[in-house]
Image 1 (tube, rainbow, N blue to C red):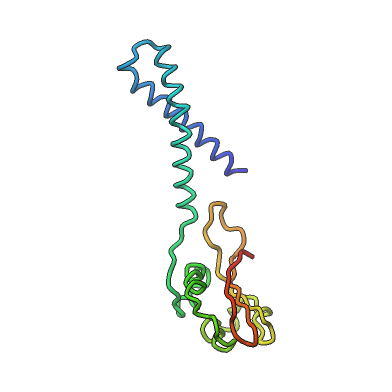
Image 2 (image 1 turned 45 degrees about the horizontal axis):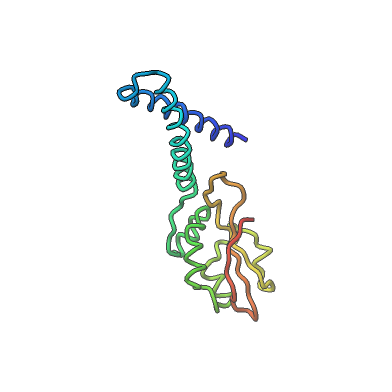
Length: 164
């Protein structure tokens, strides 16, 4: 609800500023106040939505941006809250496909006291998941993301990602 109020406030502010700006700009060409008001109103109704859309789009891009990094084992183990930065590389490079559970554990596992969701990463399970942290989004942190690893016959067959 706060976001909607903020967006409405920004929209009204843009309308006001565009109208005032056009009023001052048009004073030279339209000395009559009535004509100037009509032209400024029409100009505002055309210009303000475009400006508003550009500003909101830029805000969405800025709010959801995060750096994408190549997988680094030490960073994976030390920066647990920003693992999402490396998840695309893990998935797109298919670096885990064909690896055994022991190889995956050696590559991705952290110290036992720092383990996340240990009940999912048992040797008997064909589905493992690793905590990735809270990926930036426009709506703010909602749920953390997880790296999903699927095994068949003890080997990785698929790797994905989802918001928990």
